[in-house]
Length: 428
Image 1 (cartoon, rainbow, N blue to C red):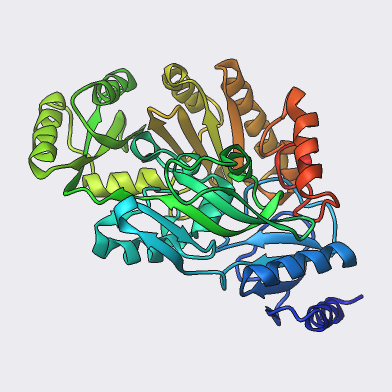
Image 2: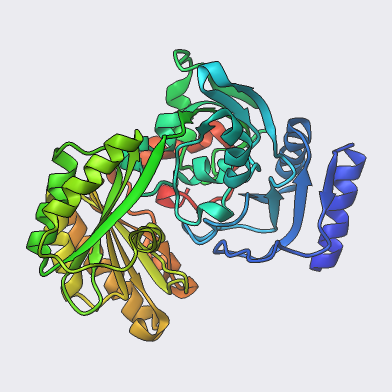
């Protein structure tokens, strides 16, 4: 069946089922980049009832559903195995359902842009404290589904820390709730933690309950260039262990040699001013970096404004991070190395000219970084890669002995395997 005929068929199925959803005229949203077969249609449910009906029809009719928000994490995960592929676009599921300022909690629909949520909360002096890369182009549901976090996880925690509860539609079209809407209510929270980072392979989020944070009275960025990595790591560790309230600390090679250390601070105005003064004293003899806000923004998006042909994140014990940073610099030279200090995270980005977009070179680089990370007691995740190597690169790593457990979880939530089969850990 041709794609246009398939879209007409899907539209007819949904119309007869009374589903409140639209079927896009185009086969996929702009910028769609999930690896696997091209989508034949896009559906945009407007409420949870429509999501349940769409999933139910997909199960009966044999469609594969890819859940998508703003698409900022399309490149993550493995190759979708089956077709026809239908994109379930959550952009119509947006808005704040409830906000309790006194409890610092909110309930939000998944398609709500993170920037829009924080703009809504700002008059109350509150915000959702998460800082994923590409934050301006991501949704709350996308952050949760991809377990997306940035260097600010050092202070704020990640999605598993601030997600209080979820409403979800599983692969059988059944809706359920896990967790709650208040900080002390932890009913079903472990199930919610399993759903965070599952990339829509276990269920479709229809509502997210989150814990908020008060806006700080003052924030500031600081940066300096040190002559070598040893000096830079020493200062970074001093920030982590000293009298500082750092949102995050980053370290990256500096143009012209040496390393740049940057930190973002928050707190009371006098407190932030004193911390900046201490940092200036610690960096005596270091040469000035680019403007600190610019360095922080640059390090916050490890792929770079121009994007990357290959982007790998290595997660290792914090004590192993300096050695991995050095070792990664001796492999095929990345365009960017970005360490998120205190989190054990090292990002290595490679441009098309570095690897000449050659599948074999990309695959060898992934394997070398993975060996280096695993030798340090960690792992490597491929965030962006050419489609030609996605199958061989095992983007999310090897689940090892846990694979049977992951299969059991997938079977429980998605018995017919219609939710992005192949995209998650272990090709599930």
